[in-house]
Structures are given as C-alpha cells and as structure tokens.
Length: 118
Image (cartoon, rainbow, N blue to C red; front, side, top):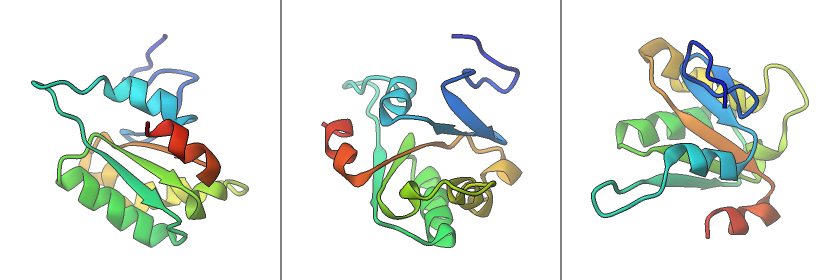
C-alpha cells in the first residue's frame, strides 16, 4: 500500500494529526500486527460510549497505558454524519495531535464487533 508523509496508508485510514482512524476493525488489526510471545499487543474495546469527551479521555488513557489500538462499538462509533465526525472530535479531545501520539482507532456497529475481536 502507498504510504503518505505521515506514515499512514492511503485508502486504509483517515489521519487526524498522527492518529489514524481505520475504516474497518480488520484494517486496524492488520496495522497493529499479530501478537506473539515477544510482542504482546493490547487492544482496548469501548462499548456504547456516546460522549466524545469520554471517548477522548479513554483514548488518552489507553495510549498512556500502552495500548496499540482502540476499537469502538455502538454509541459514538455509529454516528458519523457530520464533519468533523464525533470520532475525529474525540481524537482531538484526547490531545493526540498536540503530543504526537500515534493512536490507532476503528469503529464498527455493535453486531459486527464480535467477529472483529475473535
């Protein structure tokens, strides 16, 4: 896949500063890579969180605690009508761009989340 100056794959994600919003959970998981004994991976799953400041605080805490990515299901994840999207607003609130944090985030409808985390 082509890579832009910010290190983001074109077509696979939307960039918000150094943070990336992946179109599908599968793209997020592919970017994180396979966990193994020498390289454990932590993925935070947020279910039904609806308020962008709460998601932003959760993203910030996830990053500071060492998570490689965050998957949102239901709640804020299902509302993408306006620009900036609520998810982009949550990333702004997380202060990832200000601090240069490479957050990885994806969202999906609640019924699709079980298949994504298997």
